[in-house]
Length: 168
Length: 80
Image 1 (cartoon, rainbow over the protein chains, first blue to last red):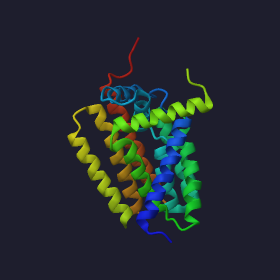
Image 2: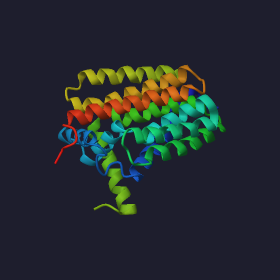
Image 3: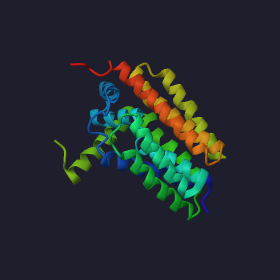
Image 4: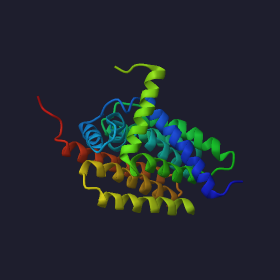
């Protein structure tokens, strides 16, 4: 089987696809959920980034979204198997309500991640690979360059709108 | 074991980025990375079913704090 570093990198790619796809599908880059998220987006735009990408960065900071769902689901599967992942999804749902977030991105992300992580454990991956993988995935969006990550998200947001419509 | 050291290294990196970033609002996404890394370290250190509650409580709490800092810094909800 693959070595741990290779498994972590593959897990990071899968986590990245899982959370970015769900966040963009649930319209996180459309607008700021709270005024703090909007303020972060405006600062990212002032720094040379994209406003819609900034909205998603701000929304990830302000409420547990699909990225948090993926991390907590991986932690749940690591600690208690499949039921642990689904329990983590319930905790993310409660967390969303605590943070005044009316959306379902976090809960959906946690449920899909639970089945993703559990399925990958059947083919030789460890849940801990996905925990570390998700930390790498969030680092690429939130922790390296806000200018570049916000532009990348904006490009994916345009792609989503061309594919599904619904953009004003 | 590589997983836990990786998470710790990412947390330290994000902390250094917070120190070097001058703009308060742009510090918050780096703080978010630290929350992710610490949540991951809690779960990796304590493989016990109750850990899920501890990790989720820490994560939701830190998110709510970031939410409060960002919203307060932005001037709060504008009253008509």
